[in-house]
Image (cartoon, rainbow, N blue to C red):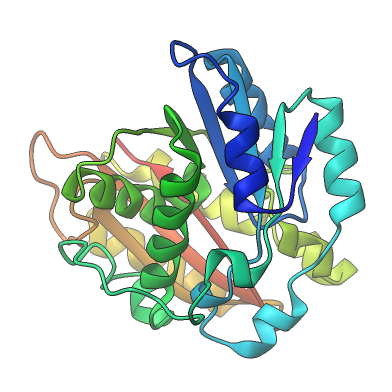
Length: 280
């Protein structure tokens, strides 16, 4: 496993790869867990070489406290990546990624960024688009891999690639879960014992939504979810939406030939957890 800390050294290393060989890319912000590693393993199976980036991107945080609190576990991250036989790791400085100033570009994501996460996290997806586009330009991967826990982000990156005619295939990766169903996240380690005990309710609620989706009205499903969290002293519901997977627009009607997904965001104290599930 080769580790690069500058763009120049990384590009020199990548230039030695035969042009006929495929290069997979997994962008991360570090604090790696088994969910990240499952994505790296998938990329390894589908490509000749894999690059993992570790970069805590300041432009996608709408709250300075969240950026400051984001866990930094670089030594452990590198050990985990070595264990799954990652080929290249890119660990750039902020100045390398943003040589002029730390600022987001403005993107037109066809309003995919205006709903759900975008409605609650101002400027978040412009920040994500800015850093991912920059990394794509630096690495020039054949395929890039994104977890479906951030399904909205996945669709937005796909839209950016489509609009900018980038030569990279965006590959979705299934949500990797703890044994009790909680979607894996670096934030899970910040949960108190009581919060961690309650957190599986998020996926349990989504599974119930899926089980009753065929026979219940959407308004009825939404009320069920709201009532579930209204009665919970540990978890606070921020939003629950059932949306078209392509447009991400919330709906109260089930239209034929449209695939829908349920999306949820919940607070456990100050810690924000998200999840989603395919409904049909």
